[in-house]
Length: 266
Image 1 (cartoon, rainbow, N blue to C red):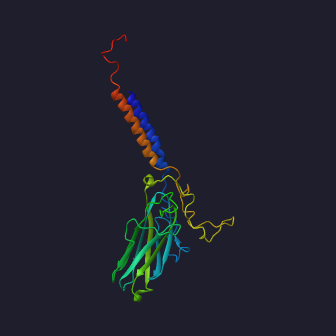
Image 2 (cartoon, one colour):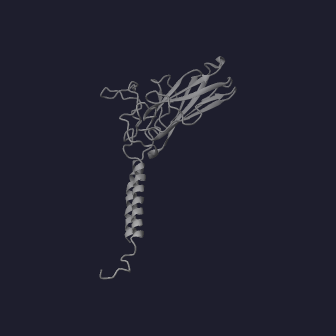
Image 3 (cartoon, rainbow, N blue to C red):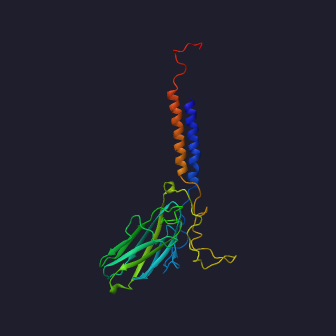
């Protein structure tokens, strides 16, 4: 009976610990796209077109142009950037490349995916993909770890014949992310997300200040969800299992009571 009561109390504690994990989980910033998706791309970091995660952005350009977009990524997310380029009917072999930069404009290496591809002569389109490393909440100053904030996408052709330069192309770009959760949590947090302070929206509020680009793309609780992560659930589970193991071991080793060989009056 004692073991049954202890197990019931432990399961109740686990239920209370696991409850906030579902309540505090929020969708990725911009996962539900509001309004119309952008139909043009920027030509530099400062003029990069803002997109939300989950939006299918389109743009028209010419071979040889540098096309830029920007999107937000928060702690615990693993961003994936995909781009599809529709090529003209007649063209020679050409190589396209997609690069992703963080808020400090440091190029982030792709964990996997085809970030550079060559389209043969007469190919109608070329598809590119780049899966970044998981965004960390904190990093050493000399590290190149991806940190929460703005990320820039740059798409361009890196090798083509002179006869194909300037031909029209159309591009589809999309940024998504997978929530990794506590598996990528670190002991530390970034004071502020890496959003551009120099690039501001054209409109100003009533106080005369101009909000930074992508500053409104975060979740309702801010950029980071706070101190909570599913690591707390696994910690509670481990503690409960250790307590149950201790109670079970004690119940098995204490015996059935007073040894039979001891006289009753002792």
